[in-house]
Image 1: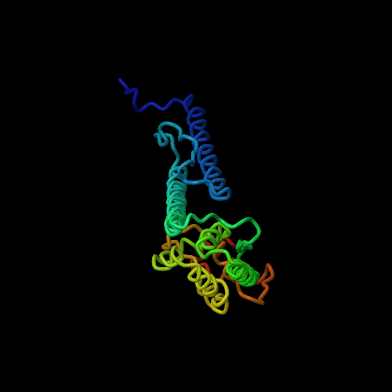
Image 2 (image 1 turned 45 degrees about the vertical axis):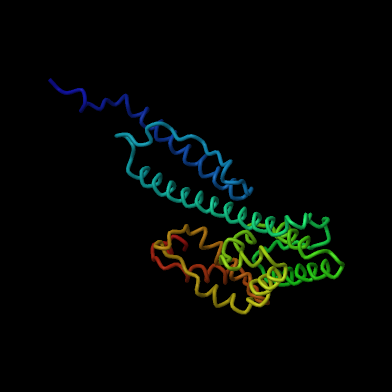
Length: 258
């Protein structure tokens, strides 16, 4: 007598398709949730993705769906780790700064005394950094205490690119800026003003390889930031596309880009 476990009646096909569609929709919703988390700077602690459907893989699950699901899951895990790291380091810098000034009962400066530093990855960032440093000097010259100015500097640094920069600082740098407003000015000038001539060299050296463990979107955004940071150089769309195309080390990716 035939076993019921090896019978696959045609009536089950629509159910299998519906199950795959449900799982695909979940992948789309989860990816959107990650994008909204990053764009809106939502702390990792309150990130609330949609719950996955039960039994993600079944005997009807096509192999391509498994591949897509696995790739997206890995990318989402990496993004979640990055958000957690970003939150941890931001909280560490804030805690160190607050600890350094709490004995002075310092409060932040009033809005408008310091300018803001919100870099966009263009050649204008250097001028913005100079203006920001000058506003720090002005606040000190106006008689505000170093402790009061220092606790206000961190609040005036905004935007995703600035947060990425803070994360990239070494442990020694983070210890210095937690203790000294002069260290803030020195490191700001070092990374946003004096470092401009190196931007073109860094941009040209940037390339994409799957072995790096990052998405091609991350590579593109980082490459564009470096290119746009080159003072006095403006790239049109054709040049940007050429630069990106030459930086991809996989023929299949370059073919897809074409």
